Image (cartoon, rainbow over all chains, first blue to last red; front, side, top):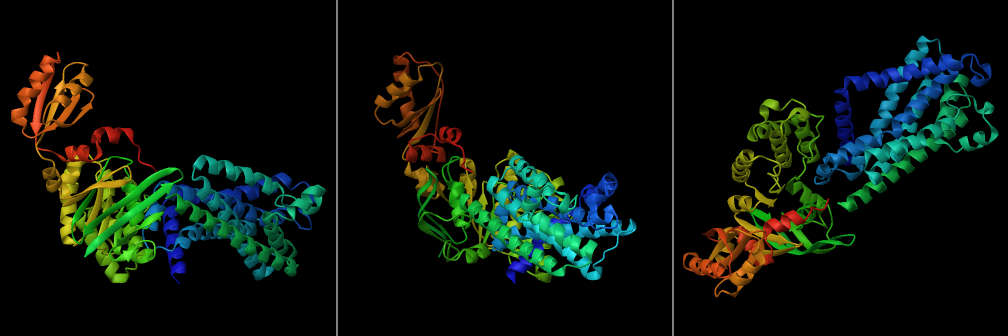
Length: 256
Length: 321
């Protein structure tokens, strides 16, 4: 109870602060649209890339949703560093605040933002003629996938933030994992046109689990067994990375 | 009953021994000063007492609760105003206070009334709904204090409350702290590296040096403990070592120390001793720029207990993060 309440208050704090940044909100909403339109144009002439989808935009949409969630997650630790630098975390630690809520709120906030972005991308997709073949369930899977992928990487990102506690190192780490994991997934091109070794590696990439689940829901409108497995895997990894972040938080407390 | 009891607190960071057995106690309702130069262990002591860190040895009881065994009870009973402001700069003053209050378990109408009361009490009511980023340093400091008071704690920790404030704001803060102590019926532990601040504000002080308390008592009592008067001689040229050597041979001169061209010593009676000191120095070929005598200050107390001048310690040491 205390954990849930405290986490929620901390999430509200972060959201309210973000809402005061109109430019940030604009970018948050415009950036995924640009990706969808840009990549949609760039690769639309290459039919082999799009798997079984009727248009490349339809193929791309679930990929862009997951990519957004993934990038958002990798950067989630920056807010933790800001709170550490400004001694906000230390202030909370001298109160009965739930220790776990200080970390979890960052992860939950990241998931919620990914979810909001997913809704925006979906609306743009509808305007471009995209159909979600999985219907309401498909939409639901897409949104849950976005939130989970974001939280998986928000956990890692916050863990790294708490270990390095420096913005520059944090930025380097986020860039280091960001692009490779994106290209080791079927975000932009269908799995079967990837080089063989990449196909093998991508099976262990949580980003790709998200892409597969989202694409099954949007493009195929089926294969729900596989969707379920991928979602469960993402839940498991979310728990693991959140535990990692919690563990690094304890190690931070020991430095005080 | 004592509001704070610290017994033999030890804390080690890697190979650095930050606390080497800190012992003192603070009575309920008093303003207590932890006085020492930067790096002496004041902030570490406060971090132990506010449950931010666990001691390696020793025990501490705050507001009747053990800091290691009942940290959450301690946290509900204390307010902590850290050296560095911990306010959320992107939120308004009121939002900061409301969140802090909720975390401390204050709810609903009681909370909003308390927040209004505090905003007036510390004098930032007009800026309550503005984002903190636009606050001045002094306003931010007031909000810090309000954050520490939102749940009506019985003990308030002020870590270096006036560092970074100009002299005028510092004097205003002293008045403020005294008023708060009275109105909110608080026990206050403040740390400071300003001797003057401890002298003005604290009813009792503990002098901390290199991770241990070297003296504890009322400032007046500590000063009275030093018999005699302090003599300060400003030398005109570079023969300071020789001058100190000469003064040390004089009968009655104790604890002679050097700080650049400033020579300090303590004698039973200043007016009677000065002619003797001057003629001895003159005899040694040393020219004197000025000489003053005064009742012992906390600075002299510090020198007496640590064998080192306060200002030297302060300049040499760096507060560990």
